[in-house]
Image 1 (cartoon, helix red, strand yellow):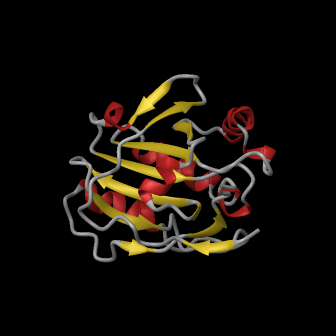
Image 2 (tube, helix red, strand yellow; image 1 turned 60 degrees about the vertical axis):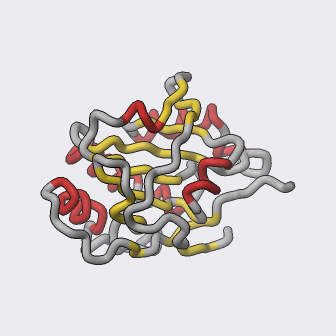
Image 3 (cartoon, rainbow, N blue to C red; image 1 turned 180 degrees about the horizontal axis):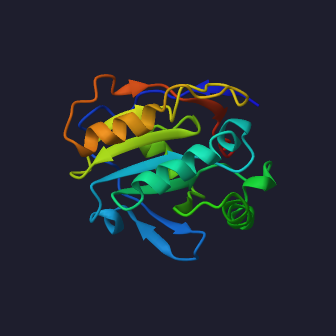
Length: 184
């Protein structure tokens, strides 16, 4: 396991890069499918990373609180060749076991992760209704899998976005396993 912090590629105010990816519902999903929402939270994630596993409850809480207002999208960009737990079939299984209700998409070419500058899992990006980046960073302040969150960073920032308040710290790096890139 290679531990990484998220890095800045997209800057506040940058537009969300478009994509078209297959979801675990066996349908293609485009970024433009989510324009009816007041914002979009894209989380680069996977199935095997202990940092992601530790956030499944937080992901469910985000969906339960904001799923009617904010599109929440999980994207798995890991190469499943060496990590079969991250295969498309295992994505379906994990989503069912963990009770994930949001769209979970596979980025098998890894092009989407590269466009966003995603580095680790989880690596969340929050965009406003206009599709502009307002926050890139952590879900909460529990930075190790066994830590207990005392600050729900993403919830606070989504609430600020929805009430048109400025998010003071627009980058607060997430920490997790590195995305498992394909060999070139």
